[in-house]
Image 1 (cartoon, rainbow, N blue to C red):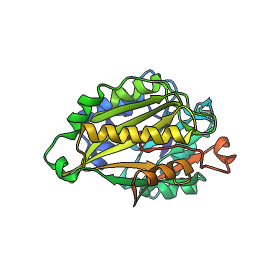
Image 2: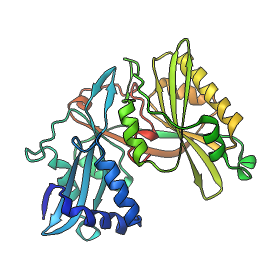
Image 3: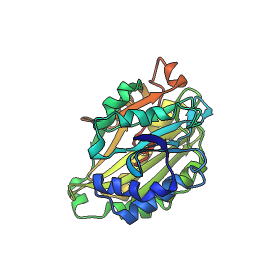
Length: 315
């Protein structure tokens, strides 16, 4: 068994690995694979790693370019994702070896910061690999109009009201850290995303707040609108409060969703106050957030990190 960089001949086997594990459509995943890894924004920066047994691909792991705005400074960070080991080869330490590959000279991948959002099955392996788990994103929900949602098409209504998303660059405040909001990053993500996505921007004399949203259906009946990302131009809590108020008014005016949800860093005082102010209720569901590298090692207070559901590659 060998850990090495991904090569083009492995493509079909990697697609089959994901098809076997998740039931993905081979043609759809092949198109996604190309758009996600070979887009100009990503292709020269990200790294794909494979575990092989002879000419058989038995594992896959990747680290993709995910720029971070750390207190106003753009940092070249990577997110870990699309991790998978063939069922017949699990329990042999392959996943840990693929994670460690990026530290080798062969990988040639200098980095100051790695981040990730692992599922429960792989979380323990990351912890053994000495990643930090400073917080888990905490979900909150706000009931909206469940009865009207059942007899309407809120996804289409909100799309008509807000229009097409436009790639946008918005620099965050120097007091907070977040995934960088740039037009280039938007163009990359828009290219592979499929579904009902929306963007709402609130502006006044205090500044600008950008909201990224996505609609999905749960149990085919419940129509959920996820506030997946909030980017603000400064740390004025009044601006953030007014922006949330404007957003919720726009949603109520334009569409009938069963509920609105948001996952926040529970260490963030501002966002904890916001969800309480606007009647969001905390639920048990969480998302692990992990980080590794020299930058992560030096952080004592993670309360200034504004990380959300849309920051995950699967958004």
